[in-house]
Amino acid sequence: MNKDEFDTYVKDKTERYAYTLEENTFEIINETSFIRAEKAINGYLPNGFNTENHEFYNIIESEKVVGYVWIKIVEESKSAFLYEIYLKEEFRSKGIGKKVMTEIESLLAVRKIAF
Image (cartoon, rainbow, N blue to C red; front, side, top):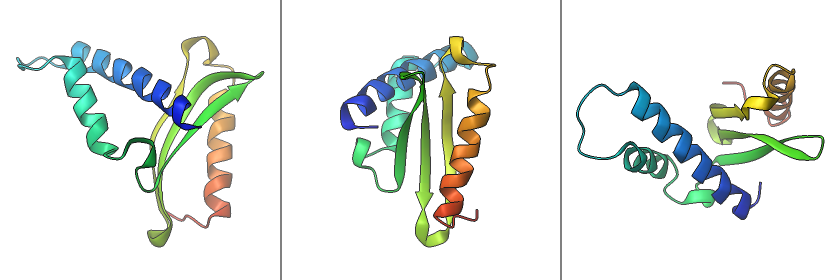
């Protein structure tokens, strides 16, 4: 994923996360769900696309971007944290997610990430 694609991804991620907050928060909060989502994502990614150890990938099927992967890999501690695998609704239940997980597992194995 390049910087422009990252910007598109973060916009989409923020909107999806804001919707989740809106639908699942039952307390009165003075900020909109969009502002809360934006703050949370910016907290995880203080340097945006260039935030250390964070990697972003497009999921491509038939030459179309059908989803995204956000993963943090810390080579020194041989650890990874998968923030998100997201597939657009119309591409779910087609085995794509399973293929993506296999690719991620291979990527981590090559890089000797154990945790």
